[in-house]
Image (cartoon, rainbow, N blue to C red; front, side, top):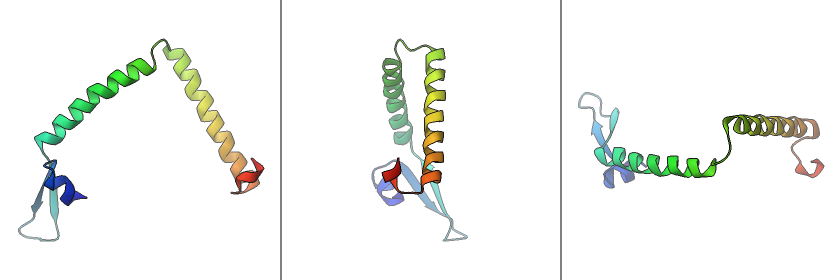
Amino acid sequence: MLEVLSAKGYVTLCVNKQDKRNLSVALTEKTFLFFTQFETKGAAFLEQLFDGINADLQESARITMETLFNNLGRMKMQYGKSDRHI
């Protein structure tokens, strides 16, 4: 994987001269530009997705989803790994 990222210019690989087993990985400017570009797009996506949903509603949804997943986990433990009982 590192070789692919290196070939595409996203990381620089440096072998330690004293210990050839030690490989240092450094992010390049191209990597930072990539994340900056997608951070902006991601923020815009989330802003549109949650448009009209205030913090109280978001918190309520989070608590509800957390409770549902906890219940499912408990049910899976209770009935075993087979999904046919759920």
